[in-house]
Length: 356
Ligand code: F6P
Image 1 (cartoon, rainbow, N blue to C red):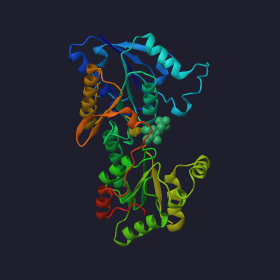
Image 2 (image 1 turned 135 degrees about the vertical axis):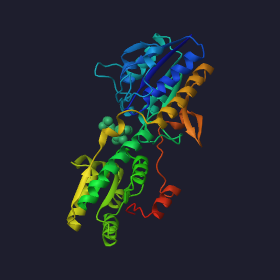
Image 3 (image 1 turned 90 degrees about the vertical axis):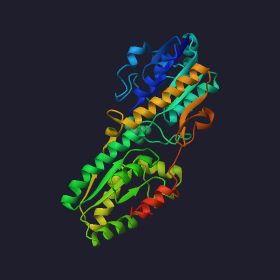
Image 4 (image 1 turned 180 degrees about the horizontal axis):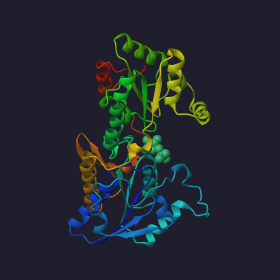
């Protein structure tokens, strides 16, 4: 008999349900007797011991379902050692509930912050297996996270739609893409949507270069310009600020970076500029077929780890293979777009400007 706790933490994304289904299907198909404790709303559920017992039926028909059947919430890692509003020690409560329920392990699905907490629980002696979820694709130790490809589809669709209206009106259009501090989503959606300019956090932009590109397109007879801007894009000037100074600037900023860029372009060129922010749509809806397959494969490997009694791993993806990565190596590291990567060079060969 295996008693498995399961939780999804942090921002949701597509294919969370597909991944959990993959784990449970693998365990039940093996003939192992399993009890699944589904903690509600992320680590909060484990802290307050809010859970529901789940059976194979609960995982049936959810391969295509977006969101998470367990609910999720954010429990910031930096506040982990601060007590709950009721004065509870979060880590101690999670350990207590794990022991009280006699769990063999916890399956934790999450992104960066979630992995830091998962690793802390591992250090505290809990058996942990994690799965890499996030539309940002910023988790270290895996070439891909699930949710990413679905979000690329949605952001690309947004750029596609903007293309037709931009060309009718001859306007400059900015599409702001999610991704937190990294540019994977913007880079991929930008290239897939045929954006003319792509601005990423990893490649600070110079507004003069952005305008140069718009004017060059104008001279060549293009009536419009599409700019894909990562929500974390940063100008060359801002990149010179210290972390503290930049944080202060962001606190004061009332609009996102796209509106600042739009304003600058308008002031300097007098061109009509519009901003579109698809926002949380990028995390919504059904997972794309790629993510359904990918999350199922990751889930199957997590199930296998549990059957073998091997813990302390994130199941990841390297060189087209599903792999086991030490959780201790993953926690606290971000995977950035390398400005010297071949994809950037190829994009530049295609005439895409990164504003650098
Ligand atoms: O990490 C996923 C993500 O969607 C980021 O791309 C984005 O910056 C953030 O979450 C938004 O968070 P929230 O849902 O808390 O607004």
